[in-house]
Image (tube, rainbow, N blue to C red; front, side, top):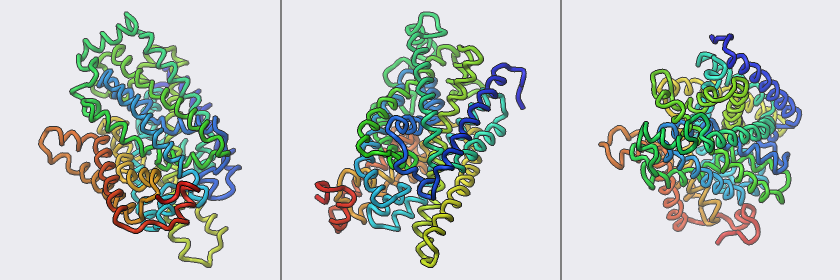
Length: 519
């Protein structure tokens, strides 16, 4: 299975054992804090701003940040950095919008998931169930994280891919099934701090041009020799950063990402609402620094040349390959474990959020009310059991998806956006516009949600029918699909709101508070 004589693998297994031990301890601590299904789903009001900031940064900086972004920079060069340093401004704009209303309303209504919030926001059971079912698209996101973890196990521990995928999923299931959102936040807080240290190291390696003659200038010169398009402001050969429109799409598409379930539910865990601005400020600073990992992809191209384009290789391997090439074995193995933390930090939140589709949105809020004879304690106990079983189910399904994408050598960042692109397109109207403007109506939320969702899905399924050209590129680019779908969702939401009855004023006041009611 692996060469146990390789010092990298030996040290990798040592650090993995230490990592698993810490995660299991966090899982046990989380389990002791779980008093019911709400604790499992949200860890409501349990954490301070600094620790929660590390947790949120870890959640937003997924395997796509550690593997996908450097892979894009390895392939597209300096232009690929637009993706890295533009997307945080979109994500944190969404988080700020989410914090403005969703945090307050979530606590007012006791929400445990974003679909549940939408249902209560618009007084619509239909929208809650539709959004919950559609949220299963996040399985693509989860599959990408499992794929990232398997890549790290494969490169640092010497496991074959299938075994690496099973180990990745097993570690996640072990601590998340125990402690739910508490385990998610406890582990993410620790992982976030470690991930920032790795980001600082990679940024330092790039700025000094470590491993390349001539330092930073030598790095730029070397990648320019390999491919002149890698040193241009925009790379004309790139689907993602080949035009200013494509760069805009990266920013716009990431705004609703800050409102997705595994991110938005962190806002409910903040202990004191008076600390919200401190929490968001610290998170933003950390979040802008984290994508500096993409600089490692540029350095990897200079150090490794075109080696990761060869048969059996993949640009997704840029950072682990760079660390192995430049650093002492023990340090490379330790940092590999840190990168594994990046993967787990997003995957655990996704697994918890996905389980709530079944436990909360479908069972607790839809099926349980049909049996009023069942006590609230029984409903809570059953919801908690479904949460744990659901976590296992979504991980197994995501494993099979990850194996498929590994075989097709799809970039991890692109796999992520096969899922969240559809979510962001659908949520732009009812969620983003609904957070800004209290005048969004129930009918408009329905129309905007389905307009964005159908647009994204239709573009995804019909891209192969188009002749090469600008429109085909938009259909192939997941950020462009999400942006076009999101703009359509917003327009439809605004138009339908103007023509349909508003929600009750007292209901809107519960959501927006005094002074922010219906306009």
